[in-house]
Image (cartoon, rainbow, N blue to C red; front, side, top):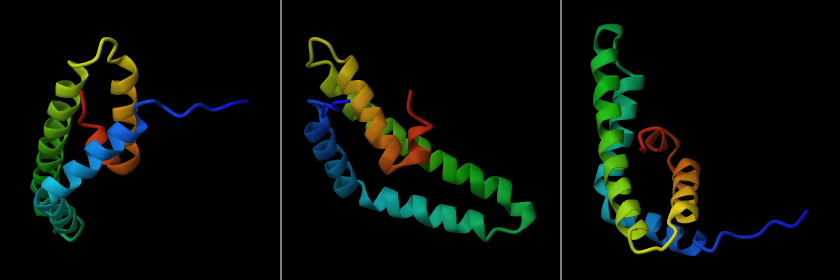
Length: 100
């Protein structure tokens, strides 16, 4: 069986690297919110989890905008979109659950 590399792998990797650099503060905030949720008392856990997921949704929204903007430049964006979503799932699994 021969596996072919996606023609969009390098583009997607570069885009996600850029996202991680440009939004490092958001990603650090997400980690902080996760830590707060993990250490929250029972009565505070639901709100802490909501804050964490809101931050994940914001990250997903930024990624969707990046993905969709580039996809509009392609004649057939399906392969690119699939590769982008696959790579986000590898790098940021929780954020990937928030992607449309």
